[in-house]
Each structure stands twice: as C-alpha cells, then as structure tokens.
Image (cartoon, rainbow, N blue to C red; front, top):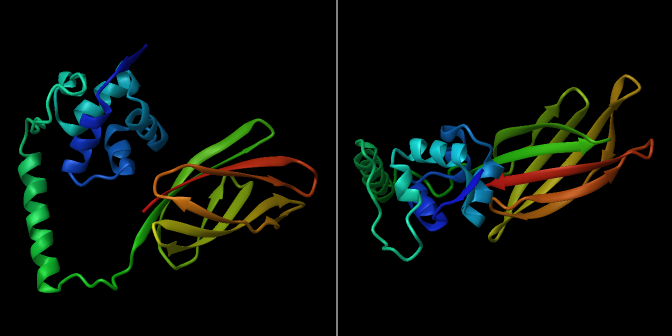
Length: 205
C-alpha cells in the first residue's frame, strides 16, 4: 500500500549528506528508479519509506511531515550528521589548498537495462570515467560499449550495441544520446532478425 511522504524533506536529507540518488538507493537496498520516482512524486510503499528512513537514520515520521510544516531539517539520530559535516569542511580545505585539481578525472554512474521480446535483461550499473570507453555485458546476450563527454549541463553518450547471435557478438546499432543528470533516457533498436529492443539508460554525474 502506497503512502505519501514529503519529497522535499527526503531530497534535503539526502543532499545534507552529499549523497547521490544512486548512493541512497544502494544504502536503502532499493533501485535507483524507485528513489527517483519517490523524490519526484512523493509516493512510496510502507516498505520503501521505512528503508529510506533507516538509510538516512531518521524517524519515519520526519519523512511524513506535511509540506510547508517547516523548513527545519531534523538531524540524524547518530553522529552521521557531524561526520558528513566534517567531511564537507575537510573537502573545502583540500580544494582551497590545491590538493584536488580541477583537471582530476570525473566519473559517471551509468545504469542500463535492455528489454527484448518481453524480457527485461537485469539492470546493471557501472562507474565509468568521463572521456574513456567502458563496456558492460547483459546476460551474455547483449554487449554495450560506450564513451561519455560533457556537453554543458548534459552528458553525451556514444554507444555501440552488440547482440550475441550465430556464435558471436554482432554490432546492431551505434546511437548517440544527449542525457540529463539522473533523468531516464530510452531508445528503440531493431535487430537484424527484425526484433525490436528497448534500451533504458540513466546517467548519474
């Protein structure tokens, strides 16, 4: 049974810890799409809401606070709030001291799933360095090689999709997608045998 939670408080509690949606999903043992949907709509099952509250180390009642009931963020019950605050201060000091270079390698987390003939090949996530080619394999049926580059506030993803047929991987498509941060993107590809597949991709950068 779904319940309503305050999506603004959820997002604020996540950002307070400098967590991405994908990291919150990992800690709460939920899919990133579930976290994205809850932050977008505020609709969550009792189990998902409880998992998010536990991951953020706050009472479930905090997430159920009515919108506009106040902007005060309830600190975690443990010392995690102080820990993340300390990390933020240390990070600022390191940046100011020049320990972190602006030229340091950036990374992007890519979540990928492929649907073909009514079957969804399980979601996979890969942490990749922006500007370098990476690849992921789905259930020995599909292989995807991709490279990423920043385009302003967007990410340009060049991909090569291979399908395992006749004993080898054969290239079926070489799409390029311009995606927004943490926003799902999809496209349809037709295989050599006429079968259509649906590619779902989310980039967290």
